[in-house]
Image (cartoon, rainbow, N blue to C red; front, side, top):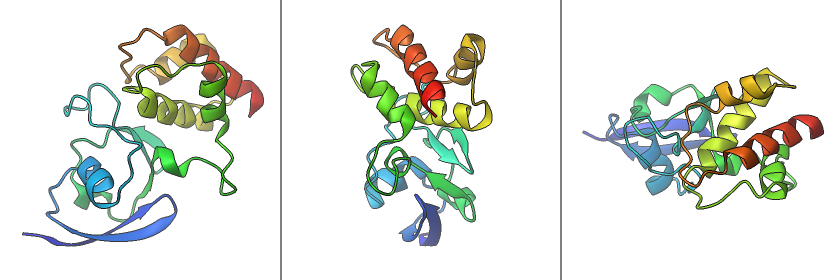
Amino acid sequence: MQKDITLKVNGQSRTVRVDPATPLLYVLRNQLEYNGPKYGCGIEVCGSCMVLMDGQAMPSCRIPVEEMVGRTITTLEGIARPNGDLHPVQRAFVQEQAAQCGYCLNGMVIAAVALLETNKKPDDEAIRAGMDRNLCRCGTHTRIMKAVRRAADES
């Protein structure tokens, strides 16, 4: 049975009519048209569907949308500055050419943003731990590390 559910996404209140058990990812992509979070594995393993939930990087592919009522959701589209400037993490990923196929990019950027919110100057071990829930099939791990370090230095 569908019902109206109001979510706070990227600073805006959005109401959708949906089955409350629908995964958040499907609502974000199919109803609210946010294409940042990607469908990857569907079992919360790859990280491509990551969003910020109350500031923490979390997979959105399995969590029922009804559990997000009253929480703050930020997608990749919501981390850029209001004037359109890229977030320092987004800029660093571009500058270090850390994006390859795009499969992991959303999750990597979201995880890096969450990491830098709690640890402004992470060392390599902290970066690896912070990005551990995201899989990259292209092997750009070295560039991703450089991007996170650059973002930390420029933030």
